[in-house]
Length: 222
Image (cartoon, rainbow, N blue to C red; front, side, top):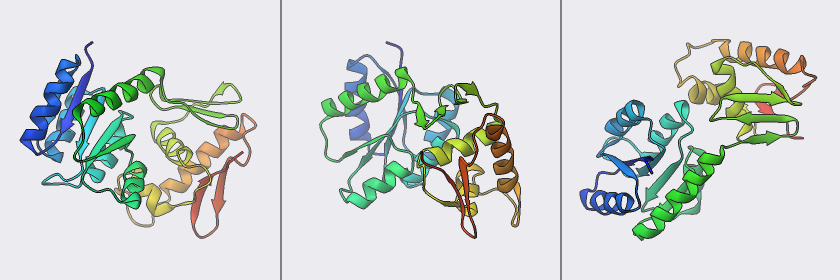
């Protein structure tokens, strides 16, 4: 086994225990004591899975998860001392695939790591009616035909597809897909939506992207 696990955790005792258990299970373990180091390590080493502490000294773990998710579909397991249901929901919406509440048994964490890596090996597929998106392969099909999307169009469609039916404002889309870097009054989101609509329409995919006047956009559910 040569799968790499990135552990972003500022508590050296937890780091030591988790690293030992993962290495005993046959994984290579990279460690980072804070969010900035974790993001740099993830970018330079492309880990197969990230274990992320929520209470980091520089950034909230949910923010790190969001930043990781902008450029990677790597599985993310968050470690948190918070047990509130709404907080857990927020973590999943931020891009986490699973979470564990502290204190936890390292053996259970290893078991969850194995589950997530099995899912990753099979490859995530988002299916909504005739639309099929493969985030890891960065492929999109409609009615069995490939939809040739630009990188940003693919990111945008995948973002909408993870919660079909939910209406996202332009500001939410700009923040999540463009990292909030678009100038004010930009029409970039609208242009990308129009381009995606045209490409889907060429494959008889009419009305998949829904415009909600005065609010934003949503991916239509079947």
